[in-house]
Structure formats: structure tokens, C-alpha cells
Image 1: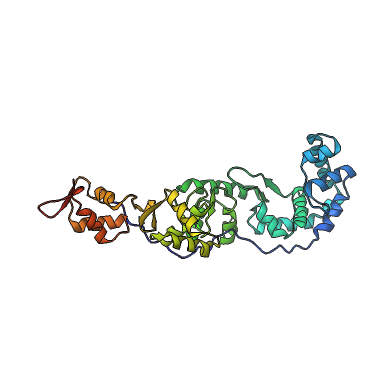
Image 2 (image 1 turned 90 degrees about the horizontal axis):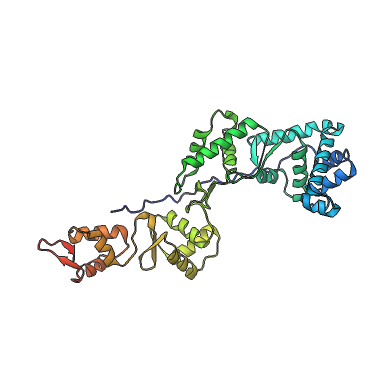
Length: 362
């Protein structure tokens, strides 16, 4: 017979995507960008302005869109863009701006040397116009390296190739070590991650940086309760009421009435959850088992679907059990009153009482 569900702790983890306060850098991005663009021929300057959203509209344009405007190919636009960046890097203004670029590099190092693009830009500026200027500076600066978004990782920037490689390898290994249903607390995910990190500078092994590195991965993430695991795991992904219901019941560690599930979703996650809608979603999803009047448990806990009579049959099987044994075993997999079990057990069409007082299936 399968076990009852274990009690899941209601204590919420504090692990989430970490954010720093906006960076306080000493240079003015608008002034610096203007100076750098002044070193570029007019047409290349226009391409850079369009590409990075450096005009008042701050809309970034594709190579194709710019090519269509001028009647030239995408490749030609790319060449003009590259020549403009080269002109900046070879200019006196660029050399004079090295202090500012170094300051930006030190900021990235303070974040762990490698950081998700979105996290980096959010930390650098609160408005899109300023973020566009930082994008431009990151591309122009020779110390910064961008890794494109892949199926495994989000787009990210780094200033330390060696560390970046080790972080990528550690995240891949951590993902491989997780099972599809495993859920880890904050302490557990950090401990497992540190085990996978090899020869990384100890200065980077602090909680804030480790959390930030974890958010580079697309395959490892946290649910709204800040519990971590594989992103595709039913305990981690939350795409609708069913997933929130799963987290609510798992968090409770005991069967819940569908109305209580709806109320908890609304209070815990600030998600609108109508009682009737929640009930319908529970009925449709085989992760949930009706174990009493309106009470739902998780199938993974070992609770069995079906009427009480069917559960009794499953419990007895080909052997014989006493009344007390049957009641005990049935209540491990169904929320039901003793009397309901006895009423079904005394139906001679399905069960037979033996001379020794035990029961068997007819």
C-alpha cells in the first residue's frame, strides 16, 4: 500500500531573481554616447542611432527595416554598422572614455562577472532610453562579451570568459542532476550549485551572485513559492489555475476542499480564482484525485480514484483482511468515514465475511 503524503513545510523560501539598486556610475551616458557618435561618418552614425534606439523615439530597428528605408541589403547595413563601431574603437574619444568603460566592467564584475542581459540593463537604468545607451556602450566596449540566447540560457553579458564557461558548465550539470519532479529549497539549490562549480574564484561564491547565476538558466527556475527545480516540472511551472492549485495542495500537504483551494490561490498568489472554475480544473487534471466530498488530494501521494467499493476491493485484493485492517488501509488512500467503509463492506454482492471474521472479495 502506498504511503500517505508527507507534510510539506509552509515556510516560504526567499530565493528569487535577485536585483540590485540602479547602478550609480560616475559618467553621463547621454554625453558619452554623443561624443562617441561624433567620431563616426554620417551614414554609419545614422545606422547606429537606428539600430540602438538612440534617437528621441528610442525604438530599435532591425537591419532589414533600415535596409528597406535606404534601398540596400541587410548585409550592407550590417557592414555600415560594423564600420561605425570600428571607427569609434579607433578614435581618440574612445581612448579617453576608457575610464568609463572600465567602471562599467567593474560593475559587471560586482554582479558575478556574468549576468543575464535583462538583469544587467534593469540594474543600470530604469528607463528604456538610457538602457539603449548602455546597450550601445556594451557593444562598443572591447571588454564586454555578449552570449546569445539559446535553448538552455538567456542572453547574457560577461567580462570574464573563464568564469563564464565554468558557470555555464555548472548550470548544465546541475540541471542534469535534477529529476523531473524534484523540488529544492533555497539552501538545497545553493548547496547543489556550489558542488557543481569547479575552481571558481571564491569571491564570487556569495549567496547573491549564486542566485543571479541561477537565473541565467532557462531550464532551472522557481515557482511562486520560491521553490526550485526543473522549469518544466509540474511543481515549478505555473501556466494556469491547475498549476496554482497543484502548488496550493502540495504546500498544504493534505487534501483540500476545492473552495478552499480557490480561496488560497487568490490570497497566496493574488490570482483571481473562481470556485466553480477551480473545481472544473481539478476534475480535468489527473494530478488530482477526489478523495471525499469536494476534497482533492494529489495522485502522487498514492490516493486512489473511484468509489469506496473499488478502493476496498483494491485494498483486500486476493487476500483476506479484518474489518479494522480494511478501515486502516482504505483511509490511507481515501478521505472517508469509517461508517461509509462498513456500509460498503457489508454489501454481500461484493464482499464476503469469513468464519474467522475477516473479509474477502466475492
